[in-house]
Image (cartoon, rainbow, N blue to C red; front, side, top):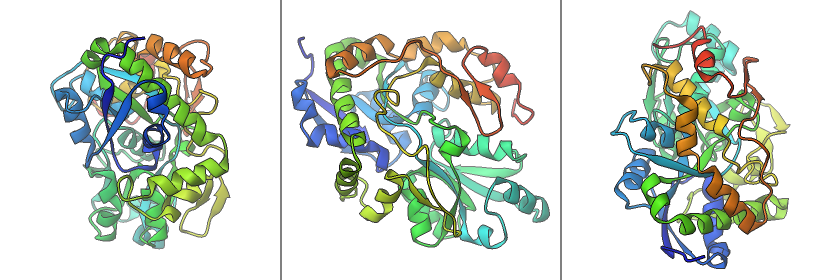
Length: 377
């Protein structure tokens, strides 16, 4: 296999779930597959999008919805994009300010009750308008009868700036990836009102994203890249000892730049909510799960488009399946998985039950998008 480009520039944001890219580079899985990963720490998801589009980055740790939003021209000029693989499942959180918790708002139901009593403008932050965190936040609020775009104001803040802005009182809560939810708990400024896996158990989260132009020009580079990241993902999930080592590595200044104590507990599934609750989570952040966490299901990508339609980011229904098939590089992924010795699930659609009891299986996306009582058309 002739590698078209042996040095691959990969962007990431400082979040725990960038770990498989970091370790693919540091542990030599990239060299095993004939490439060298050069990591670039980014400061925002908008920056990641722009650098993928201009070619400054070859690929990136990216929000699922960022890739699809760019494909569909939401908030930017449309550009053909590609999902090469899923990087992880689970492990995000909705955080509410300590002040709200002291007023009794510690979960969705009590937040809704407080918002009915205290009629002021509530402000919640997410990390990118079409991103996963916006969609988890909106879905969670709506599941408790709160219209995220009418009953509240939502703002966009880069993940690493969430805790500072919560501390300064600029918002009432946020949804972001770890370690920033746990960091807010550690700092005593926020409580975990919900984990993203409570919203959708084993939900898709970050992807390895690229422009479609890059994939078409460098298919063997992309196969090697996916194979290397699959091997790193498998290494992380192989044992708690490996997860501990990963937490030590990614907590360092070049990567997430925070205390290891902010990363490690939730990597091990050990949660505390900052309000006296503790538990061992059944669906913690996972990078591999024998390949199940990495497979790019068509139904996962399609779900994000249904939520874009639900919240008015799309004014009409796209050809959901056709768009998902164009973006999702299933054949390339399967070839890369074979290189890495990773099992590939059968089929391209999966079934999931979300927090409101609705079942999503990818079979009728237009009907699903239109079925919600709370929406923005």
